[in-house]
Image (cartoon, rainbow, N blue to C red; front, top):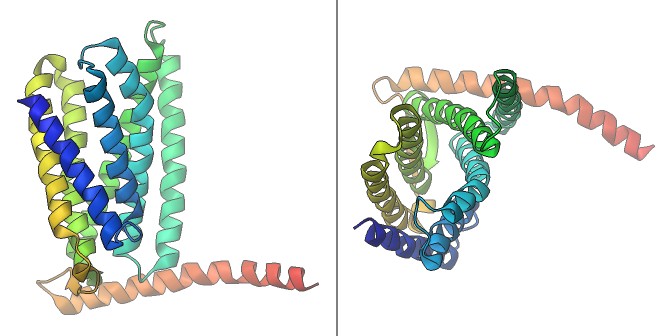
Amino acid sequence: MEKNLVILGLVLNIILVLRLWRTGLHSPFRHLFLYSFFVLIRSGVPVLAGWKQNSGSYAYWWAFSEPIFWLLAVLLALDLCASIFHQFPALTSWGGRIYKAALGVGVVLSLGTLFLSGAPEQFIWLHILLAVQRVVLTSLLLVILALLFSLAWFRVNLTRNTLNHAVIFFVYFLAKAGVVFLLQTVGLQIRGNVNMALTILADACFLAWIVGLTPRGQNVELRVGHQWNPEEGERLVRQLALLNDSLASRQTPTTGVRGIANEQ
């Protein structure tokens, strides 16, 4: 049953990659395109090689591919943030820098705590991966929840594709991160049932991306956020615009100085 679900997921990934490419949506959703291609390779190699989940080869493959998953997940989240707040480029730029800096500090502190507490020498690479994994997933969960709150609170214009992508990504990543935290907390004895549930949900999300992202949806704009009080929502957006202008003005003098230096 689980193997059939994995094969179904591979088929859905192939369809999504081809659909994004043929419709030209691979450009505005380039990180989703890369992530789908990555999932296709990550899931396909063990199936083609016949590796079981409890085998050493599968474990090494997971360890090799897991950091790539973190990188693409971070890029997906930052890309989604830029799409939601496309009206405020300076704000999203500063927010992205702050998040990357905080993530780097979190990883360093996590590894420092791991070694100071006396990490076991056996399978040290696994303990390092799990320590970094907790930091990355926790930070991404906070970013995703903040974006979800922003969609409900701020009156912003989004294309239908962006809104659909945001909702699907929220469901997909929250489930994926939730499963990781559940396995680390409860233990691996429930891995079989949990993995099957996650595979079903992941397949459903890839199907939703196939259906929900269309060329027409790229041209249809929707007004979302603060539906219970549109006037208050507009006021909050104006405050975001003022903050964005303030951040943008801080970059302008630096740009001007560089321009004068280049002219000289």
